[in-house]
Image (cartoon, rainbow over all chains, first blue to last red; front, side, top):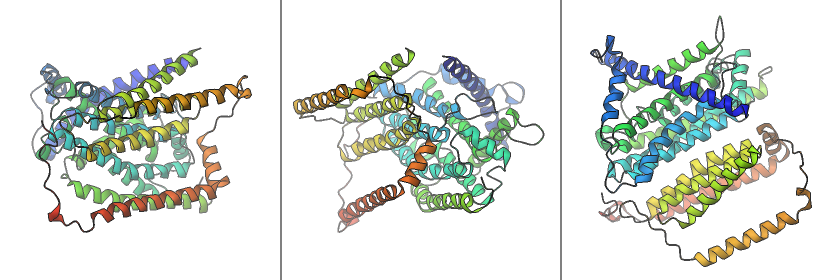
Length: 325
Length: 181
C-alpha cells in the first residue's frame, strides 16, 4: 500500500513540475525562435511577455470544441488523453536524484521503450477518428515514422545497458558517476550513441526536422487538423511532455544523470534535461523538414546499420577492455 | 487481498476486451481492442513478477503487432469513411472452439495436484533470462534467430516477386471513393 502512496506522491510532483516547465518552455521557445529569426517574440503580455503562455492557454480553452460530423466520436475524444498519458509514462522510471524516483524498476529501460512504443496508438487513432484525409495521411506517416525510428532507438539505448550491465536506470546513472559519463567515455560508442539517441528522440516526438506527421505546409496540421480547444491543447502538451521526458531519459542514460562536479544531485539532472530540451528547439528552429522518403532513407540506410555497429562496439568494449565494468 | 482485487480487475479487462475484439463490427476498433487485451495480459505478467516479459509484451505486441494489424486492415480493405466491416461467418464454430479449449485447459489445471499449496518461485530477472538465453541455450537461440531472418528475407522476396512485370504505368488509377469525408 505504501508503494501506491509513494507512486501517487511522485506522480503529482512529476506532473506538476512538468506542467510548470512546459509553461515556461512555451515562453522560452517563442522568445528563442524569435531571436533566431531576428525578431523579439512575445513582448506584450506581462514583463518581457512572460505571461504569454497563460494567455495562450486561456485563448485555447475558450475555443469551441468542434467534432466533425462523421468522426469516430469515442476514439476522437480518447486519443488526446492517451497521448498525454503515454508521453508521461516514461517519467515514472527516470531517477531525478539518488532518491527522487517514482518506480525504480528492474526493467527501467525496457519500460521506457515499451511506453514509447505505445505512443503510436493515440497518434494513429487521432488521424483515423478525425475522418479527414489530411489527418489520416498524417496518422499513417506518424505510425510509419515512429515504428521505423523505434528500431535505432532500441539499439542505441542498448549501448548504455551493455556498458553498465543493468537495465535499471538508477544503476546506469550510478555506474556513470563511478566511471565516466557514457557520452564522454568510452567516446566510441558512447558519443555516437548519444547523437543517434538524440536524432531518434526527435523523430519519436515528431519534432522538426521530423515533423512530417504535422507538416503544416502539405497536410494542413496533420493529425491535429480537426482538433480544437482543449483537445488540441492536450496534443500540444503531449508533444512537449514527450520531448521533455525524452530529454530526461537522454540525460540519465548518456550524460550521467544527477552526477556532476561540486555537489551531485537533483539540480544537475534538471540542468542537463533542460539543456537537451533547449537543444531540441535549437534544432527545430534551425533545420527544415525532411521529405518522407528522406526520412526513411536516413533511418534504415544510415541510423540502423550505425546503431548495430555501436552495439557491437559496446559489447567488444565490455569484453576486451580490462576494468570496463 | 488487494492482489486478488487487482488480478480480478486486470483479468476482467483482458477477457472483456478480447470479447470486443471478436464481436466489434469495425475492424479498426477490433485491432485497438486487441491492443487493450495485450496490455492487460502484460499486466498479468507483471503481477506474476515476470516484469521483463511484461515489458517485451507491450513493446512487441502492442507497439508492433497490433499496429501492424491496423496497417494491414487499412491497406488491404476497401473502406468507406470510418467503418471497415468485419465479416464474421464462423460464429458457432468459434464458440465451439473457445469452449472446447477452455474445457481442456480448465480440466488440466484442476487435475494438476501441485497447485494446491503456495510454492515459492524465484523471481526471474532480466539478468537470469539473458544468461539462460545467451549462455545456456545459445545454440537454440541462434537457430531461432536464423529462422526468423530467413522468414523476413522470404517475405521480402515474395513481396517483390509480385511487383515484377507490373510497370508503373499499368498500375490502376487510385480509387476515388477510398475515404469519403
